Image (cartoon, rainbow, N blue to C red):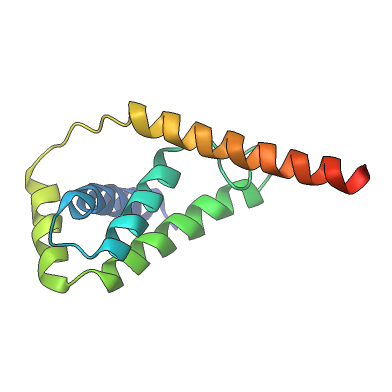
Length: 126
């Protein structure tokens, strides 16, 4: 892919992320869609990846595959009229994403998971 194609793809993903934000806050969105939109946004803005970016190639593959796959899933599950409305809102409005509280929730979830894994390993070797 050329640099221009990558930039176009990144711009599309940015618009979709903004539309996901509006979909997450839209009261007409089904609960499953809201949960998936939240998970997608949380993973997108999380400083912690499933596969760390320092691992060559694999670290970027999860970002290049997982985030677009989650976006695609949300788009398929949300009613088309709601998605189109939120997509047009995302293109016309700039939003100020303030996810400080989301960062704390994400860190708490990761710490909880690390604690559960640590306890499982401890009990396995005890």
